[in-house]
Structures are given as structure tokens and as C-alpha cells.
Length: 205
Image 1 (cartoon, rainbow, N blue to C red):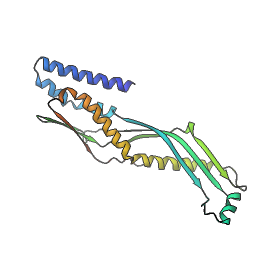
Image 2: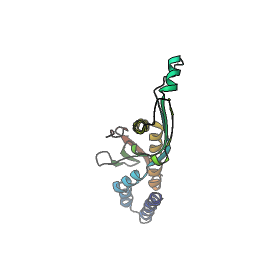
Image 3: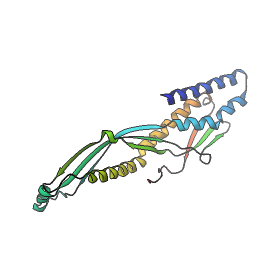
């Protein structure tokens, strides 16, 4: 909520400065607003995309071949585990001076940004759901769940890092908010957003 209020406040400031520029005939003031890299960086970084979902994994030592040895193994030695955990993820951009630039020409505003990527990913372990199926000769082993949870985190995070849909939605959200910021100037300018760099998130530690 605070993020939304802050974005609205920034846009209102731009509209006010634009109106003052028009009112007093100052093109320098308008150009300063267009080229104000500090405000644009703050807006772009605030325009993050929040995603929620559930990650699931199944681990089993049964091959489901259907032969008699498989059925025998199910009865005595099966170790099958299901785990489902809700997650929260955030996509956006992490701006530094090397990957950010605002260029202004007579009719065009060009903003260079780093490509959106997965910024954070968290499994809600307090809401985890589990199930298991074990053979008669096996006992409960907490280490099995620990291994499955670790694998689930690595697999699901890797999938989200390369989720083209969420990355595209993040780009669209950034574009929409920057268009709101530059709205007073888009009557006589076009806005182009150029994304530089790879979308891959840093490697897991």
C-alpha cells in the first residue's frame, strides 16, 4: 500500500511540474523532469511484480513398472513422499548506474533498464502440506522430508527464474507505470523502454 501511495505521489509531482512549465512557458523545467534519472530509477525499482503460487514435488523409489517385483517392493520397501508448499516471489529490476540511462531527443524518450528478473523467492514452510506412503519394513525418516524440501526449493526457484510469462508481465507493469509518469509529455513524445542484459537470477548459494 505504501508503495502505491509513493508512486501516485511521484506522478502527481510530475504533473504539477509539467503544469508549471506550461504555465510559465519553461521548457527547461519540463526537460529536467523528463531526464530526472533519480525519480525514474525509484519508480522503476518500485514497479515490482508480486507472484503467489504453490510448488509441489513427489519423490518415490517405485518405478511403477507393474511387474511382480514392483508390487512386492510397494508392500515392503516403498518410500513415496509428496510435498506441497505455497510460495511468494517478486520480479523486477535491480538498477545500477551502468545499466540505467535516460535519453531525450526532440520527439522520443528512451529509457535503458536492466532486464527484469526474479528478485526474491520464499517458500511458506508454515503452510506446507505433506503426505507419504511407506512399505511395512520402513520407518518414518525426517531426513527424507528435509532432502525433498531442499530439492523442491531448488527446482521451483529455477523454474521461476526462467518463467517467460512472469518476466513479460514484469516488463508490462514497469512500462505502464513509466507511461503514467511520462503521461504529460507523451502528447509530443514517444516512450521507448530498452531492456539490457540477461534475465537469469544469481546462482543459488
